[in-house]
Image 1 (tube, rainbow, N blue to C red):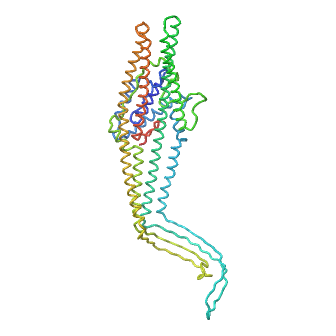
Image 2 (image 1 turned 90 degrees about the vertical axis):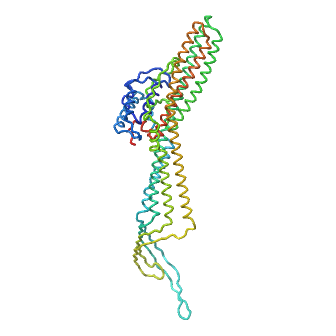
Image 3 (image 1 turned 30 degrees about the vertical axis):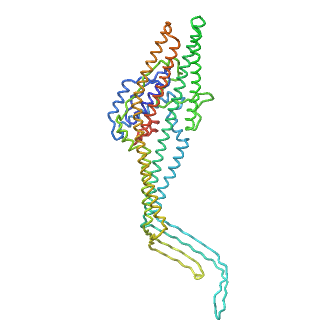
Length: 530
């Protein structure tokens, strides 16, 4: 996982702003470095990032030339890595699987399909409304009519009655229908914005699950390396004891730490299983190849060795490739977030819907005017037209003026204004939270880089100190307990270093998401369109 972190960080961290042509080496030799170590970047890699940094636009928009170069380089690198890891699942392969299975994303897709129908619904209110009807009935009865001298005359009724009509109504002046159409358009736009926000959230959740898996695998391999180292030391001490050169105290001290390391490895294995299950739940398919098999996944932007971690990896410290953040200034990232953040865009769309809803509620107080045309044909429609056939044509204007609705329209208007105010405050809260997140992630990157360098220096010092303590003990000038303490210190520093690297990577991805850069396009190596 050494090159895993380096290449993933390089590809994701600068995918929005630098050329990646020279990012990956043509071949990556396999080694046995511990998960979390990162190979040393070449000078050409750093110069490529510096060259790309000079063409960053301050408003967060990428030059088209750099978009094409970045897309081509990234896609080529991913193709190479996919061929190298053909038997394993890549992040680019996991992305369409998550799109096809993740319940939250499927719910968002269905919601978008539902809101998209609002466009047709709103337009329908402005178009002519045509309706037709036909009725036919059989009349059987007795009719009584006053006659001479107070007498009643009776007659039997037996006849068929029919009525057919066609009516057309076209609104000429109707603010309610007009604002309903505007509201429907705004609601459809909001559905699109919510869908894009859900897509971004899915990409972020997938990357979080991936990073969690890397961290769990890191922890397991590190603890296994510690256990292997202690096991080798125990075997050496037991051999010395058999030749009357060791003592029981040293053996017991090593055995105690070995059992603790094995217990920690068991716990790390359980954490890895949980991380694997979390990723599988998003993809909807079992990823393991069989009972007891480890998760056959490879991070998309990495070319890692399949060799397991060994005890010597505890003292092998590879410097982490930390490409410069582009754009480098915090104000540029804040501007990008204001303009492109998916949550802010969705909240703006929600505010627009609420504002149009206010106008729609106010329109209930306005009069309406409609053109009406009607044709009807009746045969013995009633007793007065018995045995008569009539054709009627009506063309005219229909004016409707609302006078009193019991206070309903006034209350509805007040409710709409309050909801618009609520949406405005929610937009302000979303913007403030997003900008705070951008600042936090930006500080996490800048401060995280310094922390990684400090931990690398500390790990190097601890490794040298462990080696010196071992040599001192071999010459009889130190104790075995001193060696174990130095080894524990090195292990703790290595664990902190691995965690700092993952936190740095997580902050980098989170900053891209907060700035509105589509993470899914990074996964599949496509160019940015915004």
